[in-house]
View 1 (cartoon, rainbow, N blue to C red):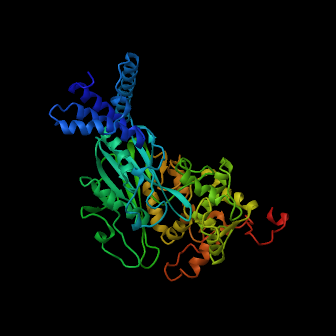
View 2 (cartoon, helix red, strand yellow):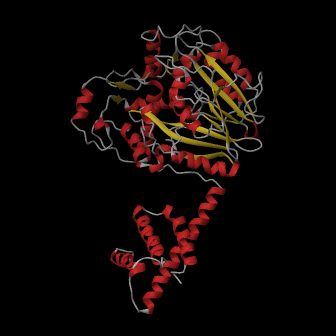
View 3 (tube, one colour):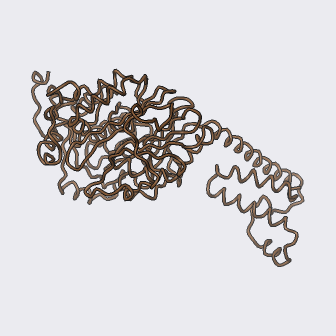
Length: 520
């Protein structure tokens, strides 16, 4: 019966269905078994070929000859169990396609991104993708990682189900096979990708938008209309953006709404200086009451993002920054992960935060060259030291338990166009959203129009209001850069120089502490 053609076809179908769930060695074994079934079913094979088959190594299950009935029954039982497992895998696969589940962050061959050299930043070619549902059957987030020197943070693509079927993709990420497979599960259930939006001129978003759009040539691909490159301002076709791209009209209120009736949108445009431009697109998804934002706002808590905690290779970044000495190998605990994440967030925002000290000279590099095999990479290179007493307090001032804010460098940019910020807010705060999904750090943010507008108070409240809620020691480096080396590249702002709260009294390592009375 096993050699009957119809039975063989059924066996081969079930085995091939389940093979994707097996290890490489098991897959190889199954291929040999399938080959054996084909070969033994070929009655026209010559006698010489039959002899070669006998000499060929085959799986023990099919080649062992015996007249022992109990042994034969045990082989049949084993084969039967394999077939049942194949049927179970088939049913599980079908269920997954019909009901998309959250996808864990596990590095596989599908995570490989061959075009990483276009922007050679971490995690280079090994870009895992996780997908999680934000609004059931309506909104999903796809997270990957981006960073330099283990300062790794999420970069996010958001997918919304459009009215009447189909999907809108906002801020595309690297279209790895894993990313496209996870998206295909949504396509199979909700319809094709109909709209793709590049909402920014920033290179970290632009570099992936072209390859992503090429994966969906039938979708409308919209880009903000002030794309540029530096130091040479090249045409869009030289930036990897496909020929069918279209400039996104500035507003859904003054032009035909190219995104459809289920969406409203508004573009903010600020020119901060010579040869540069800033744009962001706020998109309101009516049916889910969700607003999408690229870089204009974000939030962080002390809990590391899920993307950084599910895979050992990514956890390494948290432990790397949790060190207090160069050669320390930090134990993988929740507290150390939080410690590393606090420092990553401070470095990501301020470059040289007030509770740390940077040494970008040659000595830390020479020290790292002496320990090239340091467990967590980079030879243990440690150009930053921290004031352990002030570092956590510094982060708490910044994060305020996850309250949304503006990236300091974006604050500097938007302060060059306060009138445009007010105009933009007048439009987007009329939308009835209950959550905001930014392209970085935490998401979603459970805020409405009033809370969102308050994020920009330091820009919209009039002259001399360019004071952020962060510690002044944190923004000191950016302020000096703005007033010094970068002075030629940015326009003057009517709001004055960037300032922070003056009462933090943070102390960098190596400096003397102020008195307790002064700090109070």
